[in-house]
Each structure stands twice: as structure tokens, then as C-alpha cells.
Length: 208
Image (cartoon, rainbow, N blue to C red; front, side, top):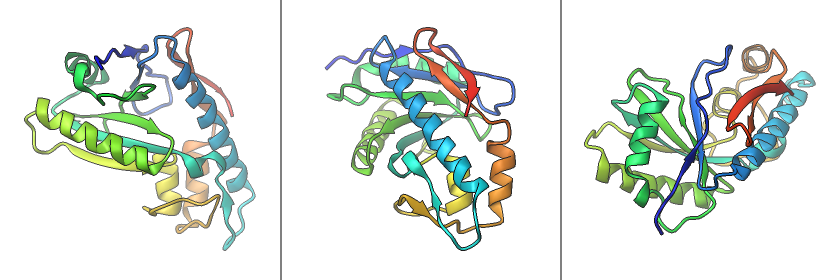
């Protein structure tokens, strides 16, 4: 199939460290809007669990147990707009044969590096997306330092709380109990999340 991707407005809200641009193969951004509500429910469950956390007991991570992502990090790109231009140039063979895809560009945690992140319903699809994106990127980008991975849940709070576990369960026991307060203060302190508005094609902070 010939790929046609649609891109939202750049998201660079005050108080959030990284800039992102959402994309989808549906001009109405219906999947991205639904994912935003999923993320809100996930962080609500995580915050509730952390606020009532007792050492040695598990935290109900809610929808985060079923959240998967495939990620490629592209070296040599300094902004989400640059990553968007690259994806637009080579979108015809991006995830060939797959319909109903949605993801986002940006979040460069390393200078000169941007990410393409794809949402998936399960680990099987996340791995398939990762391998497909790896082949795609290798055919269009010469830099051998590009990286490829799968992630579960919301990367930073989940990784800091539970470590790089192979699979998540509904009830998770923090491997780093000392991180509970830090995660609450750093990621959930203002009780808001950047929710996607499909009509305007951008994200806004909304209450958790």
C-alpha cells in the first residue's frame, strides 16, 4: 500500500521537557485521540497507586500493563520538524501493509537525536513494528548509530519504578521503592497530562 501520513501541530508546552509531533494514517486522528484518553487513565491509575503505596506491596498500574511502543532513535536530527521532514520523504514504504497506525516524533533525549515512536496493542506488534522500522531506517539513513527498541508503559516513571522488566502485570512491586516520591514529584506533581485534541491536531494540558 502507498503510505499517506498526517501530522499534528508541534507540541512544545511549558513545563514539558521534550517537543513532539503526533502522526497517524487517518486525517481525523481518531486513534491518537483515543490513545490520549488511554494515557490519561494509565497515569491516573499510577498516581492513585503511588499515593497509597506501602513498602513491599504492589501497585495497580491499570492500563499501563497493556501499553507497548516501538521506538527508533535517529542520529543526526536536531528537531521533531527535521524528523517529520525525513518521515514525509520516505513514508511510502514506512510500515508497508499496515493500516491504522499512530505514533509521534521528537523527544530527543540526546543532542542531535530524535525518535519515531509507534504505539502498539501488544508485544508481538511492537516487535514487528520495531523490526519493520529498523529495515526502513537502514534503507534510507546512513548513520550506523541509530538505535531500535521496544518499551512498555510510560517510559520514565515505569522504568524508574519497576526497572527493565520483560513483561508487566496488573500489580507491580517497585524495584526501587525510593523512586516512588521522586516519580510523584517529577512526573505527576501538577496533576495534568498533555492530552491530544484530534480537531486542532495538537496537545493541551488537562487534569489527571
